[in-house]
Image (cartoon, rainbow, N blue to C red; front, side, top):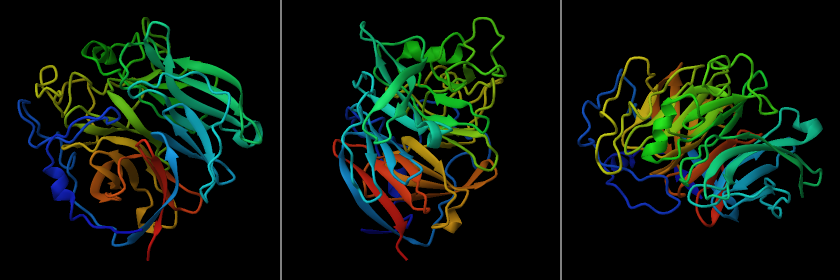
Length: 405
């Protein structure tokens, strides 16, 4: 199937009215401007609604495999095959030609209610030798509460089973909401693992994103065994969790390491309006729920309805209306040379692959691609520079994207 890369439909996106929620939908688009919220002006020029750009190329995209139940993540292995997670609690291995394995055995129990289940997966730093993988998931508790947890395990050589499963991190406290788990896993260049965590959505729990004595609404940085690195910003602070890297986040479902700077970039869901990109720095406060460029789903302001406050960081970019972002990747391949260094973002609603052209840490252009394939949950670059995406639905698809010209 061939899709022309145009931006003709963007104006329609910007005028979308709020749609009804489904159980799996993270959020719907909203009208603009937002009512009832004072001062929605951006803090600096270019912070939102970057100019529309056009790649002037044509894409071919082909469904390589389907039948996945709300897939969440794609991770390439050294042999070119992919690990694909399904929120329903299954991990599969998929070949580039579309051969899908039986579910890998040996996974722990998951809480698959709401937005929970099996979430992200990454290879260990020495996977070629020890076959370690790391994965995040919604961990169930007897009292009905859940938390985001991270485990590591050894993938058998034949790919059939996970052995030596070990839980290395558990978000504290657990909560009775089944929303806003995060979660992405990203290695830094020094062998530490970033873990992004949601604030569990409820008005009571989201306030905890501003407090350091818990893990809700935070970015963690941990060692491969789950312990806190000695140079984390709050290691020696009383009543603070030592794993915390940054705080004041809502629901980070996209994270990637910038290959040029080595810095972590994150993308988080705002409420109605205000999806945002941040570059979380050690010990800094990113504002949620005190400042936001969005409003509550009731139409009322969140807190005081302010977008800036001293001591709280501004996003480098935000969307209004929203795109419901999930996976993200910095493109580095040769198949699309004009995209090198660009940010590719999987958008759930309005569904698209969003390409951002960057100038340092600023967004200078935005393009919407693949607007006809459905809700895109994750995006990854293949070994040959092709782009791969997965769609979030009952019969989720793995799609291979190449140049059509």
